[in-house]
Length: 286
Image (tube, rainbow, N blue to C red; front, side):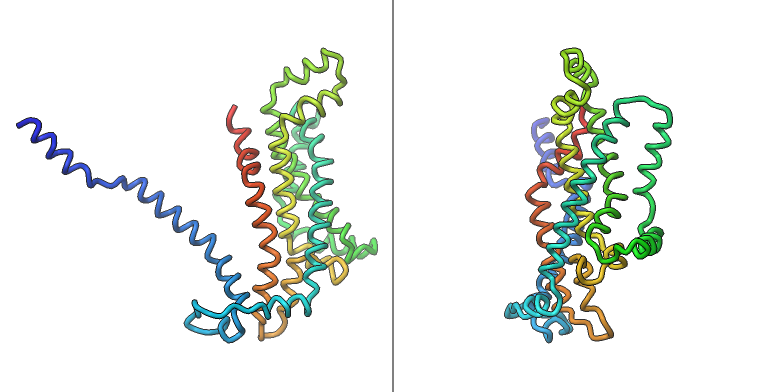
C-alpha cells in the first residue's frame, strides 16, 4: 500500500515544470531573437530588389541579387573607407596598449601621491559623453589644419581607448601575486625586466581582451569620424551615411554597406570569443 502511494506521488510530481528554468529559457530565446533578427533583416534587405525591400507586407522568399553591393561600391568608395577604418582602428589600439598597459601597472603596483586623483581623471575620460567633446575637437583640428586626417582620429580615439585599457588591465595586474615580480627582482632582474618577463605574460588575457574591445569601438565609432572627416579619411560608418540625402533613401545600398561594415567585426569577434570570455572572467576567479 505504501509502495503504491509512493508511485502515485512520483507520477503526480513528474509533470512539474521548473518555472525558474522555463523563464530563463524564454528570456534567452527572446534575447537571441532580438540580437540576431536585425542583422538577418539587414542582410536580407541587401540581397532584395528595390521593390522587394519596400514591399509591405515584407517579402520573405525572393531571388537574391548583388546589385545593391555593386551600386554601393561604385557610388561610395566603401573599400577605401574599410581600409581607413582598419588603419585607424589598428593604430589606435596599438598606441592605447603602449600607453595604457604601463599606466595600469603603475596604478596597480605602486603607491604614490595623487594616485587616486590620476585614476579618477583617467576613468572620467571614459564617462564623458562624446557629444560634449565633438565641437571642441573640431575647432582644435581646424585650427591645427588636421581635418580629414586619419591620424587625427587615431589621437582622438586614444581619449576613450586608453581609459578602457587601464580599467581592464589594471585588474589583471592586481590578480597577479606581487611576490612573483618581487622574487624576480631579488634574483637580479630590473623592475623593467620583471614587468615584461614575469607580470605581463600572466596578464596577457586582459591585454588581449582590451585590444579586442578597443579595435571594435574604434571600428564602430561614428560621431567623431562624421564631424572630422570628409573624403580622404572617411571611415566605414561614415560611408554608410553618404547615401542619406533627401527623402528617397536607397535602403538596399544602405543595408549592403552596413553588411560590409558589420561582417568583418562579427567574424573577428567569433574568432577571438574564447580569448574575450577568458579575459573578462580571469579577474573574477582568484
